[in-house]
Image (cartoon, rainbow, N blue to C red; front, side, top):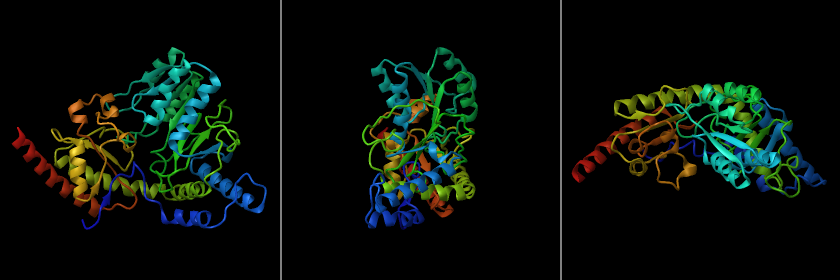
Amino acid sequence: MNRAVYFDNNGTTALNPKVLQAMLPYLSQQQGNATSRHIFGRAARNAVDQAREQVADAVGAHPSQVIFTGGGTEADNLAITGVANALGSGKIAISNIEHPAVSRPALALKWQGWAVEQIATNQYGQVEKNTLETVLQKQVDMVSIMLANNETGVIQDIAALGEIARQHKVYMHTDAVQALGKIPVDFADLNVHAMTLSSHKINGPQGAGALILDKRIDIRPVLYGGGQEKGLRSGSENIAAIVGFGAACQLIAAEQPARHAALLGLRQRLEQGLSTLGAVIFASDAERLPNTSFFAFDGIEGETLVMALDRQGFAVASGSACSSDSTEPSHVLLAMGVQPDLARGAIRVSLGNDNDIHEVDAFLQALEIELSRLRKLTAVAI
């Protein structure tokens, strides 16, 4: 390839040119604070309100349910810590494959006297209904299970799990950051009380996210100040990023079915080639996001292969970009029962709207070359 190819779209995505055009006036012209009463402030408020409607429309919610945040991590923290602060004490249950943006604030609740229960997943990284039912017998107050996993792409049956949580009168949150734009996401259909979204995963700007919230839920702010965002998230709004988030949501609402079909075709082409090369494709029999393939080759270190492919002009990831400070095997794969040695070899390819079949074929050629080279080096070392 004559140019670098980006295959790390679950980490972040390129800013859509149409989104940039929507943002430019709010980056290049004088803007008011959205809480100000003058004409500039009113214009900013109108822009935020329009974006709120666009985000709500994309996920079947009402605009009043959209709380803008600085990103998905902040929205996850608001959902978990905000409800915990309102309840005072209790027990939270999270799946053992959650993103650190959920697992770490949940574990931090121990400092406030909360108990934390982990929900086991099966060999595909799925929470089974009977497993959740058993966990909720233990006087759980809230539960968080992600809609789609950022590493494997495995999709949970959140609607069914949410129904179980409602039957037990348990507050339920889902992190839908990876799902939005790749599969249909409807807040009401999912049967949850809160849902996290992020802009930069759907070709919007970094620095904007949202918590979609059932208005009947008692929740406390995590950030105190001027009371913006219905008193739940203080701080002057990032107008340009919020406008971009809204524009990105409007685009994915219209384009999602076509995106799904195109990405699925590319993933199938990729995985046919990976299977020929002898890859172990994790959760290959489970329902997954159309763009995500998580795989490994026996005896090949993931980080080594990532760097080798980078030199060949292909940007891939060894698991979650948000946990790249850790050299430990993927906690998701370990939870699925994958052996640590194989898990250390895990590579994630996450395709995006700008990728094409020629890039996939070139990647497979480069991968075959690098695998042969690394295996020869390993043989010499032995």
